[in-house]
Image (cartoon, rainbow, N blue to C red; front, top):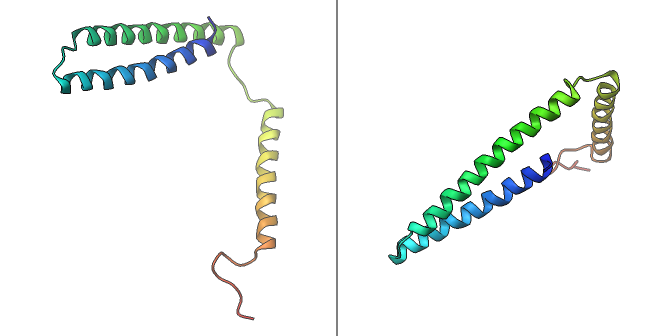
Length: 107
């Protein structure tokens, strides 16, 4: 089981847990016994805990295989370039609209 699969399964189970809790509340309001539903909820929570352990184990294995992540000059220059592009786009927008919104010149 891959890391992405474990994470998606965890998310799916968390959604199911929320639904199960809502159903338990509905049963309680109706005066119906919730013992079986609460047992199912406990099993679901235990499964999520197992998936969390599996995720942590996979992350540790992945980290040991890849080593520490370091930002090389390529990544830094790419980040600066992206920032410069955003700033240039803002300058172009301001050139087209020199007045702040709502403040038009009185010609």
